[in-house]
Structures are given as C-alpha cells and as structure tokens.
Image 1 (cartoon, rainbow, N blue to C red):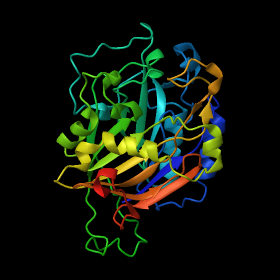
Image 2 (cartoon, rainbow, N blue to C red; image 1 turned 60 degrees about the vertical axis):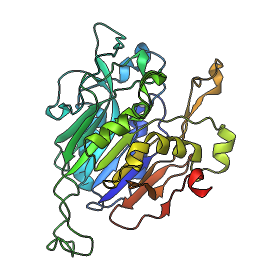
Image 3 (cartoon, rainbow, N blue to C red; image 1 turned 90 degrees about the vertical axis):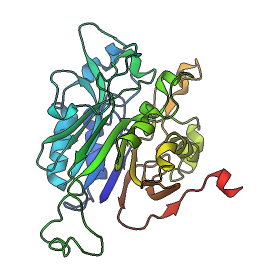
Image 4 (spheres, rainbow, N blue to C red; image 1 turned 180 degrees about the vertical axis):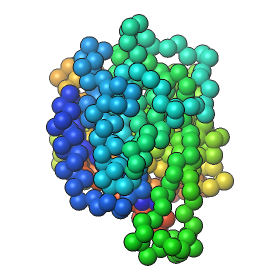
Length: 342
C-alpha cells in the first residue's frame, strides 16, 4: 500500500493561502502513485484558535466546506483516498460516522455554545469523491475545549477500500500473486486526532492506553492519525536542523501505542500526519503570551506490532514536504527502545 503524509506549516486563518501551499507541495505527486494521502489536524485553518469567536468564521459545514472540496478534487486528481482535518460546524451526519466505540458514560461534555455544535474532525474521501469516513475527535486538548464538543460516538474503526485496485497500465494489475503479494479488498482502519492518544483530559485516573487498546480490540490493520502535536523545542533549535525529526515526540507517540507494539497477533500500518511551523499564542506550560506555539512535525509512516517498531519514512521537525512509503516494501529503519539496548 502506497501511503503519503503531507507536512507543512499552515498559517492561522489563511485558508486559501494554506490550500495553495499544499497544492504546491503536492505538484510532483503523479496520479495513481498513491493509495492514501493524509494531512494534519485542522490542516487549512490552522490550529491555535483561542476561543469559539476566533474560530467561528472558519467553521465548515459537515463534509461540505473548503477542506472537503479540496480533498475531493485532490482525490479525483491523484486517484487515491485523501484524509484531512477540519473544524466542523455540525449540519448533518454522514453515513460513515457509525461508531465502533460506545460513548463514555463518565464523560462530562464540553458545550462551548448552546446554539452551535462544532467538532474537531477529519474527513476521508474516495477517488470518486465519496465520503468514506468522517471522524470527530474524542479526547479534546485544552485548546479544543474552547470551541469543540467531544465526539458523541467515540473512536471510529471501519473497513476502507485499501489498497486501491492497481491501474490497468500497471504490470502487476492482472496478477494479484505478483511479488508484492495479494492486495486485499479492504483494510480495517482506525482514525484518531492528536489528543486521542493521551489519557482523557490527562487525568491520572483515566486509562493510560485507551485509544491504542481500543484499536487493538477492534483488530485494526491501519492506524491513521492527523495531529497538531506541539514541541517544547525553541524556534532557533528547530530552524537550525529542519530535517531532523523530533525524537522526543516520536518516543512519546510510540509509548502511547504500546498495546499495539506489543500485540503478538500481527503488525499495524501506522500513519502519523503532523504539522510543522509556529503560531501565535502560548504553550500550555507558560503564561507568557508572546512565546508562540511550535509544532513537532516528524510525520512518519511505518509498521508496529509483534514487539517491533519499523519506520519506512519520516519528516524533519521543521520540514515541509511529502513523505511517501510503500508499506509492502522493507521498512528503512527499526526503532529500538533504550531498555532493549541495555
């Protein structure tokens, strides 16, 4: 399966400019060269909106706004599935939002506005323009809590038509028993958005690995994460080596996925589409407003499971571009934990 992550630095509230930048970065990607393209959380609006009033002009109708239109046109052009994050103004419920995870009875929903229902969502579109999956963030970060509601249905796992049928011009299209092996008709895919990985509200009494454990219980074959994950590194440090991944962030992600890493049943294709760059505002650990928030980049694609962590491709922390991995090929690196080396 040929998977790509588009990593870039969207500017807060500059939707059309961000779309134009994404198109520029994708210009070299040829049609029929991908099965799945994944972008970050709130990919075109930017992330760090301080309030409902601030993000309200950029809310998009359910699977019908600028982000979904871009995903549709890009999916048609590249003939692949496209998954991308956007701020949803609830209007109707797409048929693919049926849940595999029951709502949590202990949740106290955040209700920023009694007259407006908004979610931090991702939409996944097929090469024919059909909405295949629509997921709403379940565990909200404190920034989300000012404007979004928690998903009423929990996490989403469903079969996607992946990998896509090989194009007729492919030398292996007529033979599924080629050197790449049989291409299944569907892949059970679990969606998540950033904070979903963490314990609910960072509470000490919340399950530590709830998201990963749920994906494991639902026999997930592919994990798709759209994120706007922050880094503590300074702008100067990040800019000095833009192509260097943020290994602390990578380590955090892998720790939070430990139930899937340890699963003896098989490997899971893992896709992390993060953003890079910085935005105005403050980091959660400081009261200083003008420090800005910085994002960790480090988008990666690989396989985890059977006690192994294998990475096929990874972006730098301050790097814009596209990482492409064929998950049926040998992975480029294997990650070893410090305890394994000791």
